[in-house]
Image 1: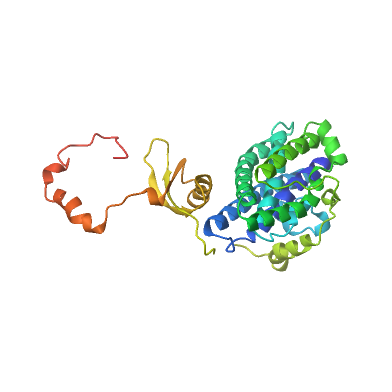
Image 2 (image 1 turned 180 degrees about the horizontal axis):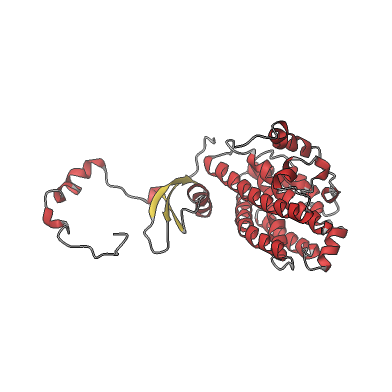
Length: 251
Length: 95
């Protein structure tokens, strides 16, 4: 098995899975019916991506672990999702900024991966990219309206930008997995993704009259090694409870 | 739910290219771009549409119930107004 490809696919799948779980918390609690449905729609798109990437990871590993086993029977230190995705919803503005950061990242990453030499990887990227393009439009449009909206909405999304900025370094960390797969033409070139991400985010924040935090800020990283923030354990406790307590449970 | 409601928009969806748009329902949104996104999320989650229109509800003029007698009843008793005596060719759909 290609250990690097397994690890890489796991990172993509876990990122979609955990953000999906977070967005799902909005179900029945959205600020209005339309946004409640919009956020859970995005959650379901991401769940579909997670299912596909994790199924492929299980296939690469070849030890009989399917997407359910990978999702429900791993502990926090084995998860490879971006730290951003496990951050709490806080309020609608915070949720939108988190979505903007992650969707922009997914947009440029998947765009690169559509050219991957691994056929499964490029097919998954093509399919996911269509969904992500919508998520990005949704998050960008809302960022403009909240940033350039009322005094309160501006202040809330600026607070979200300032806090979530510390987790954006984690988006572009490169390790030997990326380097090995980049040589094979499978992984995305994160330097390119980072440059495009920065350009889009700065444009949107600028248009939304929001300020970009200082670049010298401390960056919290670690997702590539399974070092997470305190939130992931609580997410997994809720997400994994049922299949762990009732292993034979069926729909 | 917010106590300050955003503007109301009527949503029309087209099932297939070439077919007429049908009223699907309404959404609330602050402007037309967001109305379109909301309409997509609320009324086309399971592939119901290929195109969507949103129209501010206040732009729609409607006849009122008092108009029923003068608007619609005169055509009820004139059978010659209906094309009942034509045959529809086989294979014609969507009529």
